[in-house]
Length: 360
Image 1 (cartoon, one colour):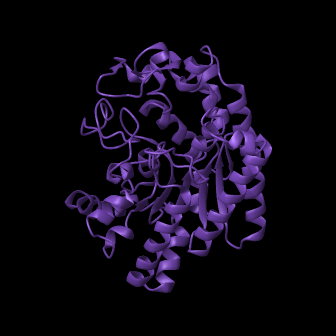
Image 2 (tube, helix red, strand yellow):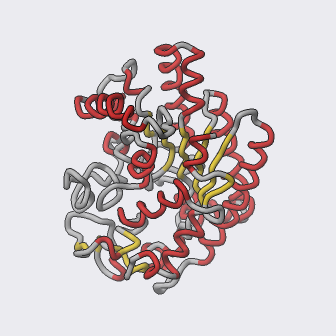
């Protein structure tokens, strides 16, 4: 716990160095393994973890932290851009009995969990994760503590200026096409995507009702082109998975536009992860990459037969690769994603980029 207290103290002291910048008071993160900073470390029977080598190889501590990355992930870079420390994992704070502490106020909380989906049950038996429903329920408990600590008026001011980031949906898309899943037989891709969007809207509405006003929401990338899916498809992208991601993204954009017109004070930034990652894959050299198909860490064809385990091999120059493992981007790719999120042009981040969202 000392580690997080020190970070909070540094934020309070160094925050004044940003006197000419607009800083949000906190970042609340919901999502899956793309932004998990260690929640799954505290799920005892989960096999969806990254708290072992070679993960963390390029992290400042040179140790695995629970991030599915060779170094920092998108959640870290978002916090860096906002000028605040990375939001600590909720389950860590809970395990340290900090439920009543100031850690819930500064610099925010991360509820993201590897394997999580919008729909419950996207993580098959034994994987165990915190689905979005559970993440939002945990946020409601945090909200109660913030109100208790700050008072209702100050809590609303704090939360209305904070950023609520939601990065989720890839596991739902991959789960739909999983041979062991019944989802494909129970609904069409359009129906399934509609279920995803409808449930996400329910959760966004609930967060809004609990003080959230500024939302950063990422669409789903071309997950059919990740090394795992290529390996199953003769080294080619899975077009069906990519098509489902696109259907969902279109529904998500329409839903956010509707919320903007119906919820007073609601602001959002939509990040077109599909367009950006697809650009990485189609034109890797434009971004400094030389490998956009194979994973850096793994074994077998495309390094995609196994996750990044201690027995896996890994590439010597992680900056060359788009993908770190079966599904996740390298630190280098995540950094570029967040560059686009923060102050990217309209084709990639709209109607506001993150910098504009903070100032709204």
